[in-house]
Length: 93
Image 1 (cartoon, one colour):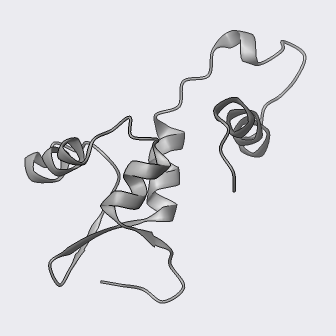
Image 2 (cartoon, rainbow, N blue to C red; image 1 turned 90 degrees about the vertical axis):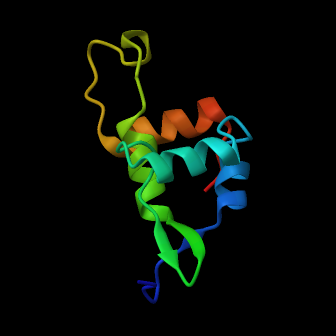
């Protein structure tokens, strides 16, 4: 169900967000196989849409932070981790 105020990405927009590293066919396989792979999606009138919140959650859940990225004397909260990852991967918000 499409919810007002929720940002959705199309398959093409998700492909672009991930800089073409995950192909459209891989996204389709993840949906068809239903093996709990890939971000959550909504099927609406024959269209596949990915809620941005779920994409960001999927990215966060699949982010591996090397020990060297966190100094031993600091505590990393989600905001600072995301900030570092954004800089590392050149993501803009």
